[in-house]
Image (cartoon, rainbow, N blue to C red):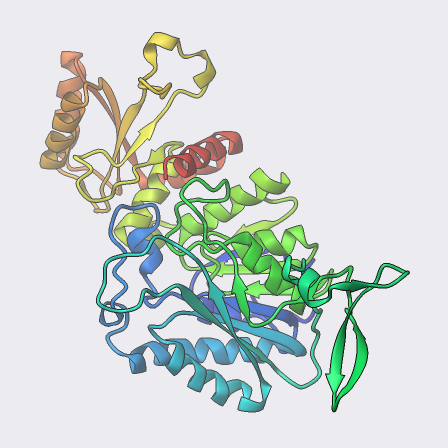
Length: 449
């Protein structure tokens, strides 16, 4: 269902948009969103660098934007747009950590007004302690702002702990707990309020992070627990409200919103992340892309694809071919992805690996260049021989005559077959690839992280 009075782009709810959120946000009308949650990166290209890659995520602040001023300059116009689209009764949550929280707070006070600051929420989590000469950091910060004093808020309760039996140790004939409270020497009975509901939560939330064996874990470097987003959405929105996440990464906000029967809009600059969001919506809710929700503005032209960062282009090409991108992006030894048999369940036991993995696949090499040359083919041939593969796929925008001649020579010898595929071929044929096969590729990609 489209939000009313949309401008030229006509952004819809229950839709994922791929692109720069600064431009996308401008297409949303004033005061049309009920709740906004963001968990922005300290570097706008972080998704490109580490999404399902083995590249270590550098958390040093200078490796992000250079300094606080540069980071705030990047975020300010985006937060201003979010303030504009937020309803007067709406709520805004900004998730950050120690790197920039103090600078972010000043910026938000200026935009939302200090008087509309509601809470500094501490998300406290436990993990293994590390040897250090300072106290280990075990929390994130979430700033909660509203646009006015009249805003939606639903009190959240959590179950009482065993301490309540001691504090309210008496029970009357109706089964209600109470305790004595002394004021100026006089005793008064004080009953436990909302006994059936539990205790009202405060501003310190102890929610476990996503463990290495958690079912919801995707391998996304900054993935947040579903329980965390469910709490925010439950507290600051109602069924049917519109929830926006303008840095939605792997889509946890969208999953929580869908689960709680809210409408949602997700924006992310990473095409790979947008594909994974769509896959999660299918895996969890069986929502069909094109019917139950939309994914818009993925790169579709050669010009757009040429501008993608290398890792994103590599992921796009491999998935468009129906393969699975390598998790390791550095030191992949000339193989960027693998194309597995479609009917994997029919693969014989003796053809599987030690842990049941299928060892039958064709390697994929991707080059983001206008013309891949003979040296590129030679490198891929070496990688195939080392991997003992007889058939492989090579994707590029084009190929030199020498490259084509070498492929023909190899094919004539009959030992190795390299199939050359241009980006133009993939763009033309991508719509013909069965959705089920793309989903299989994405599921395998997720399981490998």
